[in-house]
Length: 327
Ligand code: COA
Image 1: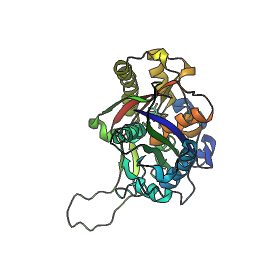
Image 2: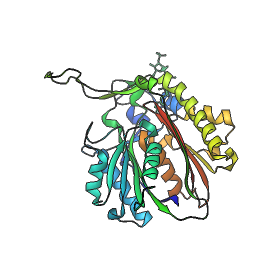
Image 3: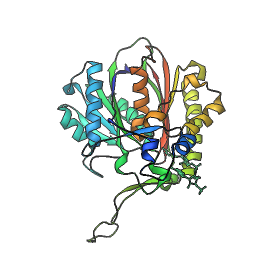
C-alpha cells in the first residue's frame, strides 16, 4: 500500500504587508530585508482570525480537491507553533470540530518549521493501522501574534498562512506517494529560537504573568544551523532512498531565508529552476511554509504525476528533516 497525496489547499490572509509598509511601523527598510532574507512581503491574519480558522479554510480546499468529505477523515494532524490555545487543547481538535470531522482522531505536532514534515510522517505512520485510510495534514500559523514588534531582527521575518494536504492509503503500482522521510532533532539548540512566555516553576505561585509570549532568536546561530541542516538532510535522503539529485524535479526547502537556501544549493550545484521559492511573497510562515510551497506547485501546474519532489524543513527545537514524495 502507498500513501498518496490526493489533494491540497491553502489559506492566505488578504492583508498583505510589503516591506515598505512594514517600514512605517518598524525601524527597517525594504533594501535591508530583501538583501538579508529575500523577503518582499508577508500576509497577516485579520484581527480575531485564529490559526484554526486558517487551517479550516485550507482544509476545505484540500478536501474538495481530494473529493473527500470531513467525515471521511481518520486523522487530523495540525503542525503549528501558534496554536489557538498555548498548551491545550490541541488546535487539531478545534479544526476537527469546525470541519465536522466526526470520525477523526486529532493531534498537534510542535516541531517548529519542520512541523509539516514531522506531521506528514506521524500521519503516514498512523495510517499503517488497519481500517484507517485517510488523513489531513495541516501546517498553519499566525506568527504575527507572537512576533516581538520591538525586535526588528526577528519581526520582519515572519508571516501568517496555512496549507493542508489530504493523504490516503491506496494501492499503487507506479511507485508514487510518500516514499522516504528522515527526521532529526538537536535539542541542545533549544534556546537559539524559542517563544518567551511567562512560566511558573513554583507551586502555589499567584503573581500575575508579566509579558506576552514573543519570539526570541539568535539569528546567527540559527543561520549556521540551518545551512548544515539542509545539507545533512539532502545527503541523508539521497543515501536512504538511493536517488540522485538529478532525479528530482523539485527541491522544496523551508522558506526561512533565501540566502540559507542559496548557500545549500551552491554546495550541491542545484540549479535555480529545480528549487521552489515563494519567500518573496509570504516570508517565513514556519510550519505552513513547506506545505504552502508544495501547494503553490500544484496550483501553478508545476508538478505532475510521477514527478519526484524532495521537501525539507529546519527550525525551532531545533528540528530538521525532509521527505521524498513521488507525485
Ligand atoms: N532592518 C534594518 N537593520 C536591521 C534589521 C532590520 N530588520 N535587523 C537587524 N538589523 C541591523 C542590526 O541592527 C545590525 O546593525 P549594526 O551592524 O549597526 O549593529 C545589522 O543589521 C546586522 O545585524 P545582524 O543580526 O548581524 O544581521 P545578519 O546579517 O545576521 O542577518 C538575519 C540577520 C536574521 C537575517 C540572519 O541572521 C538570519 O537569517 N538568521 C536565520 C534566521 C532564520 O531563518 N530563522 C528562522 C529559522 S526557522
